Image 1: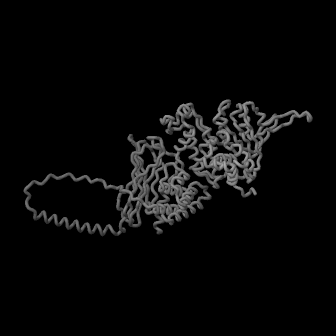
Image 2: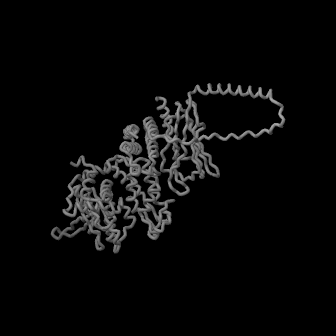
Image 3: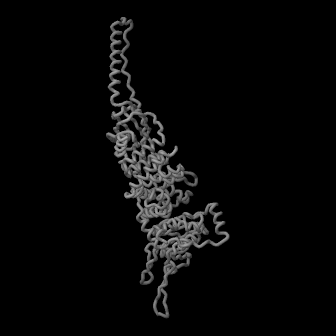
Length: 286
Length: 324
């Protein structure tokens, strides 16, 4: 549990520390926005990479208002951002190196981008795909599996050698060697699995309690709003009207709003209230 | 009594008397908290005078009503000097503008010179009569009305003058249920006089509180963006009467001034205080934005020729800026 909290703290600190420049929206023609992993089956305690790639038609130097998902189950080891611009547009690529400490399934919510759509001039929010990763085994598992594979491979080689030694002379010429088949790149992005509302709220609680800051409050607020299906540019009043949340969710939304907008001296109390409201909502019947 | 009174108590007291005009009540209270003035546009008979009178009664404040007419003179508003034959000296008679709550009824029926006299008093909060200057009472709220239906013989207020109003509120007819309640409440007996629920000192204290309401940086940027879009209206479209989308930038002559930016911030603070908060929210800004912006934007002839509602344009511009 302690390492889980530490992981949340580290990742939260890195992910939540982005400036909340929601108003300075860039005008972009988004061509693709994807999230992938360099493996679909990461090993426990073995680092792997999450890659968010955004292609836009404009030439840009940097991307603002791109938000990575909140992850409480992974520890952040590094974050690398790269923007390449050319005559046909720009590609932004953010590579986050992470490690999982527990086996099981991890669902990663989509990354989001807020920008003004250059096609119609409207402010919009784009979502990448989500990811579901299956973390397997402990760190000792790979050598055992490699040893087994090596034995199988040796046996296969021996069988091939024996077969060659006792083969009949071929009556037909050997077929021309075929070019090596092109190995298709592994399908990195896998279909997202819908996470339960409780899972998402638990993530939010972990992040907000670990990183008690305004930025964390703003990001958790955004995550909870997305979870409720809030539209672009909606206010709390709109959300309360559209969603008609129950008592505990309503309290949570109001507490998060306070955390996001109150003055600094009240921030700590506001975040405590929001954490309590999150706990109540998690504990309430679905 | 007044030490524990909150602005919401005042709102509740006014709601006892005025039915179906929550917008007008809120506008009056915001003007009081933000030390500004309100321009109300709506047909007669919508309890504008009653709202004003009730506000003054609820605060034990002085109320004056000035009916603007084409033959009104500036001295009829601010006051004048008259020669006292017994004393053989000039004496100053202060005009009806010297009150805490002033209702300037049909302000657009008086010529520009008279309008200007009132608007200068509103801005400077003092009046000069002859060689002497007189400070207006504090609080001092002017609620001016305009009738949109009858424009014969009226003098349009210049935009520069309109800018002095903190907000312009369009007063609409009450809903069916509100009108039924009006019948029940007022058809038989006279209106019950509003009892005093706060004092002028309370108002001054609330105003100081409103001034210290926190506005987050995200909200400040939101306000600035809202005002900025009124100056260019880039990429915002509204449907014309024929259904064809029209670019808002083609309808705007000029946008809101930095005074609008300040007004939005003041009003957001005031609304937060009215709702019992010491920090403002995006909802506060969004709720008051139409009232703070609608009289500060110069539209060209196409608004009328394309049959586009001014409020629809304002709503489209506000919707184009995502709330933080």
